Length: 111
Image (cartoon, rainbow, N blue to C red; front, side, top):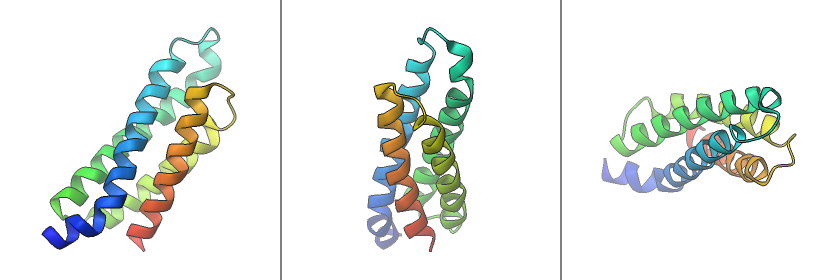
């Protein structure tokens, strides 16, 4: 298991950074003036953060299911990055960047 943990460390780190960025984005979006325009962004932020945390946990455990979940996580990250990337708020742009990096790490890990 230890070798898997070391092997997955870069992806675990990317997942945790992404989850944190997504949670910050969702929280910040809730403070925006036109909240209804941010609904999809908030929903995708929450979904992405949930999957990122779950993927990081499974990788940390050395689970045989980690690769499968990382594929789902990458899909969620790409969807979140696409949505957040449409908004000019700093928190959305930072989230999109973290999501793109995480998607790349998850795709590499799941290959």
